[in-house]
Image (cartoon, rainbow, N blue to C red; front, side):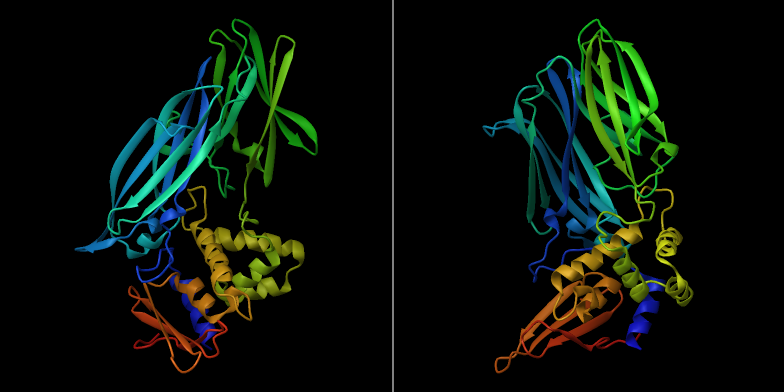
Length: 416
């Protein structure tokens, strides 16, 4: 009965949240921000590197101020050589001011920052970022090596990137931001392919873009020009009909005089099918049936063939997409993130998503506070999870010390 009540609650009040636990616990999302550098040629001897830091809201500690929640952080972005000497460095303090408590726990909503710098080809560099939470004074750090030693030829495709549309200036022209390589659930009317290459000066060139279909090359478009600068940065707009497959593979072919260079790149979509973090769709559907689907949807799923289940998977998530105008389904991402987290942290005699702690985590996200106690005379351990926003407490008891926590008091001091 409790499972049914909780499942119905999830369908109605599913909370978009992912947060670090409080300071009493060892869990922290401060290092969950991402750093990804993107580069292109800017002259025959140099490249432009744009380093992006993406900071999920759940990385930051928020403090309530009047009716809002405020998080303040400092982000440092930089590029250094292998000797550790800074070539460029920026520090920015930013404030996130939001009115919805649930947004403070979101790992989907984020802030983005970037740093541009010009470097010489033929060398190696390190891009780095440090995130400082100004409330807790805790830090997270990431770095990535950039190896340009092999970029020393006068005729070569240096790099190719997919760009999505996002209002603002992101280092590559108005409204263009690089896709980090994640699967995209939805795309707009087009996707931009950016190609950067070194060329022989004052020579005509031709660039062809092919889509690979059943191991055959299908020409999408071609570009002709004269390499007066000795390099090119070409931004090619491709209509959305070229991205109808889950994995859309493309070949870029650059021709100049009697030379040819090739570059292969893939654009992956989920189309509400298996995102990269779902390894078993049958299991994913069972998890959805347990926690998310209504009775009518469960009935459809029970009667469906394997092929029909694939279509139902897509339909269920399309019906639940809270932001159909964006390139991601935040509810789907959050749901399976919680499933994976439960499997990694709450497994015992069952998979984590089937345990009592896993169930509560999947339904309500991470608690605001966790309190632990243990009996001196027995192996009995008690965990209490507090959810301040919904005014609920859940008590889990491990009677034998083997990590098999059972839900003892689901609504301590409160009623559903």
